[in-house]
Each structure stands twice: as C-alpha cells, then as structure tokens.
Amino acid sequence: MPRKYAKTSPPPPAPAGKPSPLLDTRVIYCGDNRVQLAKLPDACVDLIYIDPPFNSNRNYEVFWGETREKRSFEDRHASTQAYIEFMRPRCVQLARVLKKTGSFYYHCDMHASHYVKVMLDQIFGENNFLNEIIWSYRRWPTQCRFFQSMHDVIFFYQQTHDKGRPFNVEYEANSPSYQKRFKGKTQVLDPESGTRKLVIDEPSKGLPRRDVWEISILAGSSKERLGYPTQKPLALLERIIKASSNPNDIVLDAFCGCGTALVAAENLGRQWIGIDISPTACRVMAKRLRDVCHLREDENLWRSGRGFVVRDLPWTEDQLRKIPPFEFENWAVIALGGVPNKTQVGDKGIDGRIYPVSSMPRKSGEAVGELAFMDVWYPIQVKQKDKVGRPDIDSFEAALQREKRTTGFFVAFDYSEDALEEISAFFKRSGIMIRALTVKDILDEQIARKLV
Image (cartoon, rainbow, N blue to C red; front, top):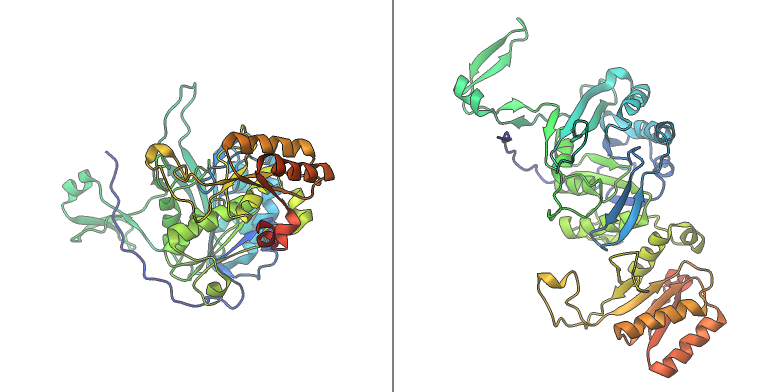
C-alpha cells in the first residue's frame, strides 16, 4: 500500500515588485544557455534546477500540447564524453550565477549520471554535495532480461557551507505500523548521547522526507501532460522549489523545455528565469504560463511586475533560414495567428490552419477533436525556401480544392515569377485566393496590408 504523505499548507504569495536590481525575472530567453548565462551577473540566483537532454542516443516522437506538432526529438550527443564536454562550460556558468546561499539540482538518468557526478564535484566541490535524490516511479513494464529501470537521479549541491541556505523541511506521514507501535510518540535524536528517545508529540508531524521520492510519472491521460517525452510532473518540481527556496526567491531553469519549473515557481510565489534553445519550446511554455498561471505576456504589465515576456526569438531572415524546418513552420504559422498541423508527415500540403474570429461551430463533442468543431478555416503552407516555384504552388492548389477552401496562405522567403503568375491564373480559373506572404512581410508587420 503506497505511503501517504502529509499535506502542507500553500505558501504565502510573493511580494509585488522586482526582487533584484541586478537582473530581470519572469523572462523566457530563447537561445543557447551558454550565451545567455554569460550575460547574467555573479551570484544572482537562489535556486537552479536543470533537466538537460540525457546522453541516451534515443529518438522520440513529440506531440506538443499547444500545436499537437509531431516532430523528432533527438538527444544531441554521440558519446558520454561529448555530453560532458557540452555540459561542463554551462555548469561552470551556473555555478557562477548561483548565490552563496543558493542550491543546485541536476536531473539525469543512468546513462551518464556517474560522469555527471564527477563533473559536478569538480565544479561545486565534493564537500558541497548534499544528496543523490532518487525519483522512483512506476510505468508499464516490458519483457527484458534485466531489472526494469524505473527511477531518475537528481544531484543536489549547495554553493558553499553558508548557514543562510534555505531548506524547508517537508514531512511524510508515519506508516500505519509506526503509528500502531508508538501510538502518538515520535523518535528524536538526542544530540548529547547520540541515541534515540521517544517523546510525546500529538499530533505527530511525521518523518522528515527521505532522499527517495515516490512521485508518479505523468500518465498519457493526465491533463498536465503536453506530450513532451521527458516532461516531469509538477509535483516533483514543487517539492524541490518548496524545499530550497522561499517566496520571492529567484529560480532559474536553463533547459526549461515545456516550462514545468517555471509554472511551479510561479504557483509557489517565486520569481523565475527560463532559457531554452528551441523557439517552439519557448512559445509552448509561454502559452502554458498564460493558460495555467493566468499570466499575461505583455511588456507593460511585465514592467509593472505582473506579466512576463519572451526574449530573443528569431527575428531576422538569416536566423530563420538556419533554424530546423519544423521550427520555421511553427514560427510562421503562429506568427499568422494560426494553429500548426497535428503532424509533419503526411500533412497533405497543409502546415497549419487559421480560424477566423467569425467562425461559428456547427459540430461539437469529444469525438470531433481539437478545434475540429470549427468549420471555417484557412489552410497555411510554409516553405523554408529562398524562392518558391510553380510546383509548390500547384501542390497547394490541389490541397485547397480537396479541402474546399476559398482562401489559403503561403509563407516563404520569396517567390519565382512563374509561382506568382500561377497564383493569379488560379484565382481567375477557380475564384480561390492564395495570399503569398514573405518572411519579410511578417517581420516588417506588413501582414495586415497583404490580407486586405
């Protein structure tokens, strides 16, 4: 029978206003964390949690919650040495920005944990290692000729031995056998004799939490799940943030993925900073903060300490040429106010859909699917090409006719003369309008002019 944990009361809300004059909080930075961390001042963060890609040589199929986008998510590193070489300079920067009273948590699995521990001992110091936390969970077992792996490792370090480091003890309920045996008494350690003795403690707080944490992974049916393959449960991050920070402290996640640490920090009244290299991830976590935490992404509100902002999303044509195709498609569709297609493979010439405000639902029900109840929509096709040719336009025309749409949107860097001539001829033949937009139109905010 699983052990029940003692409930704790919610923390008080964080005080309004900026906690530090040295840096901005409630900001998501899009880009390489090594570059962004170098811009932060020394000793400015109270708590760091990171969950970097594991060195597991695995491929994932990712379904993002905001876009239901399916894409390949590949761990970046071909060897353990390459992984450590990638992580070392980043951990050095993380140690630099952590306050002397700060705490650091590194989440990893069995593939490289021993090498990570050696690296962290070198950076933070062996004497500053506090715990190897075991996150134990259960999932559907498979037939194999070895023991099932159902745990992750979280290394917990302090920056120095400063006594000002926060640590808020959480208690777990005494087991039924313990309660029956000691009947309301609690074992405590006598510091003088080194022996344990029983004292009356009604009601008992329970036992201080151990370094083995039994927290369920996210089930496929969980409302919390976004589809990210390594998404961690909110309860796990809340436990870490409660233990090693106080209200209005600054929490940093430099590999923030789908933003679980940021949501947990916001819910618990902490300030936060997130960094991720993926523009898609940054937009997904921004939507999550809006939907779950009811924060508004607004520059003016952020300046007054109430909203949040996303910084450094790709905005030049050169930058957008270099990002992966699925990221480019996602950027373009969202920039138009659309919803990216559910799949990248077999999308039948449609990368996204725009649902106008005037669209009225004619169908509803669970079986219909996400947004399928809206009958009025316009297809979007995106090509990361310098010049789209007539064959690309021909394919999109076929998609428009198949879906019986009267208008469609095409996004590319530019179009050949043949492509533009075909767009005009297609409208004369069929009455179907293709709006040809360039990346420059979007960046220069000329979309409205093109849509009239």
